[in-house]
Amino acid sequence: MEQKLPLPPFTFETATQKVQLAEDAWNSQDPHRVSLAYTIDTEWRNRDKFINGRAEVVQFLTSKWQKEQSYKLKKELWTYTGNRIAVRFEYEYHDHTGQWYRAYGNENWEFDENGLMQKRYASINDLAIGEEDRRL
Figure 1 (cartoon, rainbow, N blue to C red):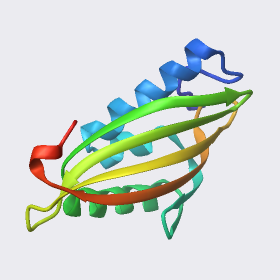
Figure 2 (figure 1 turned 180 degrees about the horizontal axis):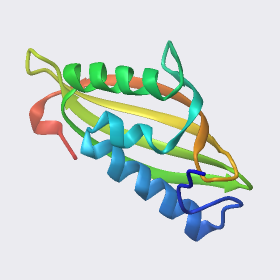
Figure 3 (figure 1 turned 60 degrees about the vertical axis):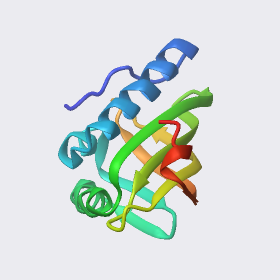
């Protein structure tokens, strides 16, 4: 049986650890690595996209990081309870033309008993920024 520590129910310390592990994985920009934190049948909403299962996660992230170049993410624990965690985040990237963006948003996560994320709901807004305005 696959497990991804720490396991729920979460404490402040283990929720904070889970958030940092997610940040580190996403900053690797390795779709396969990221997908291993999710259940085989994970359910996502990412902006206007609905993604189901690890295979679709890998496909989605591969496409995402081809478009969102020089990607750098920072996540922050917002709250937690039982097997759920909410985070706020921001990330920066540039597109193929060199235009930089900062994306802001919130995610709601739900984990199974093995610490794998079964649901991820993300609300995200992008703001065009100048390269001189980058923070990450």
